[in-house]
Image (cartoon, rainbow over all chains, first blue to last red):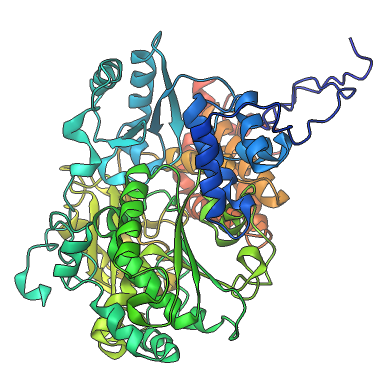
Length: 212
Length: 428
């Protein structure tokens, strides 16, 4: 064991990694050598295209992390190293960015994401109960179920985002259906998808004289 | 009268041919024949106030940008994450070209050549639709070089966020767009002087920008006749919570709140009554059922001690305890605090812990006073208003529902055998 290992106090900070021991003798990670890091061709091209869109290439770090997470399923050290190698940034910089945002995962996770909104409107309509049911339904399955901040679909509360597809209003029985649909790799709860929902306003889209 | 929601459910409105058939991009043609200053002037005359939350006059904001040849930027704030708000989602999903047209008009007026839409990462469907619409607009010559034969050039990039409430705050959004953690910046300098990449930056909400084509089409004067004094125009109102028909409704500003909640959204479920409601997203101080006759506009809400905010009404009925609502709020804001300023970081998490103490029977009524003082010390003491966004509603719940919170404290103490409050030393 290195003499430089510093134990941290477990004071309940929510900063990820705070309580982990660090090895101060280890040299800091620098920008990875592009000759050493292998990057899938498609990923490299996509990241370079994203970098070209902005006046300052740093702006592409969030899009690039999205791309890497799609490729690897989570932001593994390899995924971070690949982005770092293409963007010529340090892994530390990218990790600091990734750890700020809820959609990035620095821990291994299943590919399928179910974000259940338990914020104010959804919880009024039973979002907390649905979250419990969803957890129970996904037990033992390879599905990443997590509570999420308001997803901006309070009109279909309680709702969830299943791999980005917004579905609602949900009943407790829908939890099993979501897991079944995910396992069968078919469109999830198609009749409850937000994309097909009409605007609630009865006056919208109906008055011909207003179109002038 | 429907302006933004006119034709909103028309099949295929998200595609260019249908949008053009419904009169789309005509306002842009008109705007390009006008002098830029006249475009800004029209927007000022319309009396349009920002639809994102602060309600700042849109024309004035655009006029703050310095004149000159430097790189100027427009950022459309589509990071709609204020709990209860979902109007921009509907606009972007169903009428993306209206937003693009508004962006081009605003950029022409303010002399901007680079525009960005910062959309929250969770809106994947909306991002796909916008991406397709932007590609169509480029192809048709509404974006890119020499737009519609003029010498005006504009590039538009859609930027997806990755899940952070704070990125809806304009300076946090700028940092995030620059590829950093979304920490808010110290103001001044305001973004209009020094924003994205240190350049002058105009930041507007989706709904604000989507209204611009209609202002050009109708004329600022005509638009200002909609609504009421100091709150011109129509507003998309997202109504959610304990109502029968939750959804987005477009109304003229100044419509009585009761009409919105009861006539449009169907009111609470049978046999239930409204306990409290948020008039402008979960950051606005709460109102009660006695306030239902207030006109829904910027000034009336401000006079009632709350705000119109993003135009999201959340209705809570009498089956829910105010404590439950306060807990949800505090939990959310303490999770979303970026941690840069102490009053917000500590204030939100301690408020959450104090509210939890009520549930576990450890609290005394004195905690409510401490909680109220904590809220007072957050407000105005941070770089951005995230802390205020918790302090205002929680403070108002403590002030307006104090007897019920005291009852809850007492009941929880009895339940957990902590004994009645009188047994605690220091409480009279």
